[in-house]
Image (tube, rainbow, N blue to C red):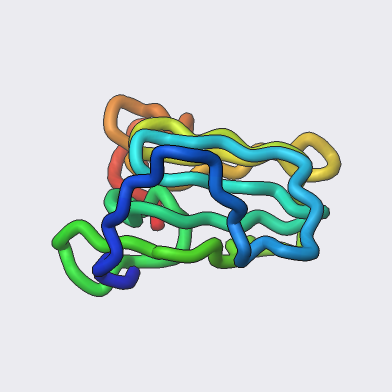
Length: 121
């Protein structure tokens, strides 16, 4: 993640210029992160705590941020149709209905079983 230096609140709708030219077909906002499906790709931004962006292990245990939409890479090449962000975790559905999850696994919220109750980056 990138340490956020530009913590500016906006009081009116503002175009996300980094996604210019991409057709957003689905999006979701979590507690402090956002994800968007553009075609078959997923872009994420915001807080990377607990692995909720799915971008890998953060560089530090401190809160880090990804300030611009960043393409999320999946273990296999899949087209993604839908995305959903929770408070500290995220999920998406692939083209044939497969579910991918990442982020904070406390309380079994990722559905990966008792042996995987930790954060998944």
